[in-house]
Image (tube, rainbow, N blue to C red):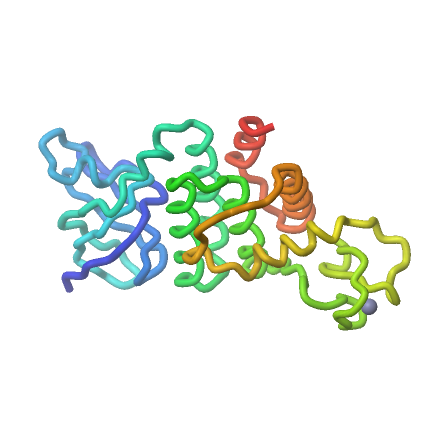
Length: 242
Ligand SMILES: [Zn+2]
């Protein structure tokens, strides 16, 4: 069956001398493998459109749960601003590696939308740290380590919130507070905005840079302690942005 799919090439592996298999996160079918016959050859029309980090429409012979076969592809967006900036490439690298992990455990359609919209925002020049943190907050649910940002995680009240606790996975109210570390409530409020914001509708990001860094640090620690993910690209990104 010939099928038109929208997707992003997460990785590629050589296959024989002139062919390769690309792993594409698609809007329609989640993560699929597509064999690109002859695409490594200099004369192939598919040479430039089957590279890692290509965002395109792919015409394929689709086979469910098997390798599909590429007919041709048409680029949707070259992501030229990201690809010309080593720091932004590091963000893209990390988001791709993280999404590859998350896709195994969650709703593929929702994850696709979060991932693609984040990349497009970064390419348009939005603060890449903020955009990446928004993705990280939204992915927590799929990683099974959701933080409750609406009510006290001990009693369920939404009144007199005083801090947020890693151990309790959420907010703590005045009544339940024991000796948890006090986290600035501005951070809590912004984390909540990150969780609920629709990436597709963002037209402006206006957060004090100091707070942006604090939130990034908060999420770094939370990810380190609770997700069990150790991503090489994250270490690299940290070195680039510290
Ligand atoms: Zn409480």
